[in-house]
Image (cartoon, rainbow, N blue to C red; front, side):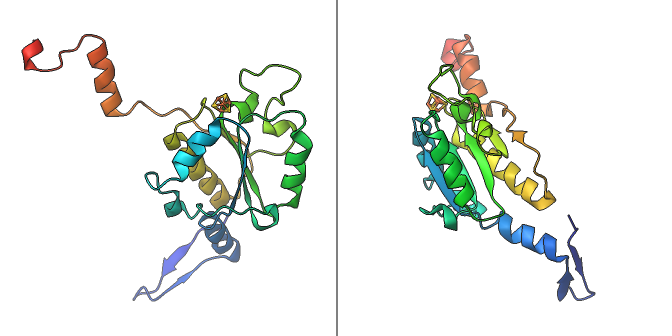
Length: 188
Ligand code: SF4
């Protein structure tokens, strides 16, 4: 992927390659098709709510026709009967297109290790990002989205698993308290 060069003594113009410009515009204008089947949907809705402001990534607009979407969110457990439907939806989407497996069930089947469940979206369609968690927290979902944007910039189609985050500082303090840390000076 080409690098973008900002130039000119007076900063009045910039140069880039067409593919870099295209990748930049794609990365900031993802049109999502949510394929929501199970309980992960609750966390998907939380991520889409104002608190996490997914609009700042240009990825907030759902499309209810796959023909107008380029980002497929597979959210929840995929049963054998849903498999052909999911494949058809993927095939109908606009190119280039990307797939995010939202949660453990979509990534690998989760704890549904039985004959009714498909063990992961990649058994049916190519998948770009896997977000672990049952369900994943919105922060992990946004990490996945940012990873996808990075991949779009680089033109990289290698699948990636979202790495775990460190516990936020507030959570660490709470854990410390549970382990017997003093709550206040009166406890000391
Ligand atoms: S990963 Fe957990 S929360 Fe998500 S669909 Fe599966 S069982 Fe439900």
